[in-house]
Amino acid sequence: MLATGFLATTYINSTGDIRRARQASREAPADSKIYISNFGGGTTGGSLAAMIGPRAYLDVLEKHFADALKAWDAAPQDIPERRLRQLEARVGIQVLAGQGGVAKSECEQTRTLLEARLAERPEDGRSLIGLAWAYVCLGRNADAVRVARQAADSLPIEKDALTGPYFLAGLAEVEARTGHPEEAVKILRQLLTIPASEYISIALLKIDPVWDPIRNDPGFQKLLSEPEPETVYK
Image (cartoon, rainbow, N blue to C red; front, side, top):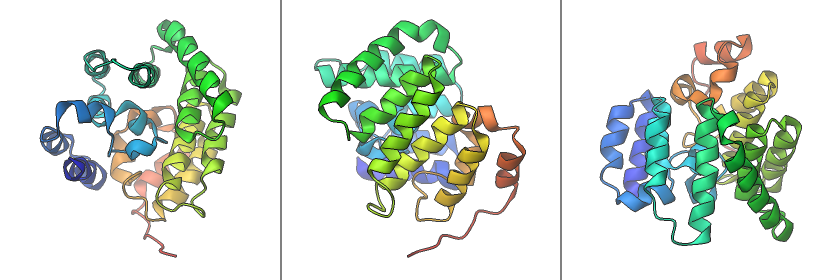
């Protein structure tokens, strides 16, 4: 199961080949495609791809947002944790689809649940990222950046080189979505020079709709036009 997830990630990040990624994903158990994400963030969360899950995010990459929502609607919701995961994913998908306005009630519900959880576990990075996207949906951009930065600061790459980049990528996504292209590009350049191929690549940046708000930004266009930077190992 883990191997198929990483294989799908490899196809997306190396060439942007969604068709081959789908073929690899089909080999995983159906339930794992929703609830266990090896694409863009693993079970740790951090990036929007991790929050939405590998199966649905392949639909997102092709902007088949209705299909992504259907995948989550069909997922089991037998425990509160899974219901919360579904709400987080639906919020993220609808924000990317430009449907945040019609998803306000779900965004408010998600915000309430995550704020309550964070009152008990203030350093829960996954919940912080989920809350950031609920804030984006609600137009609370300053709050979105604040909690996304809190998530990244809670597990910096200097402390955890494996998990830290997930949350740094999540911060870049929120910066891009809240009108801060320079900050987003700065973080992306950092991620592209560290061992972070599972989280970000030029091929993925070119096709992922999470970056659509900054797609015409000169700094982002320059980044996409340049060769992929060499990884620096420390």
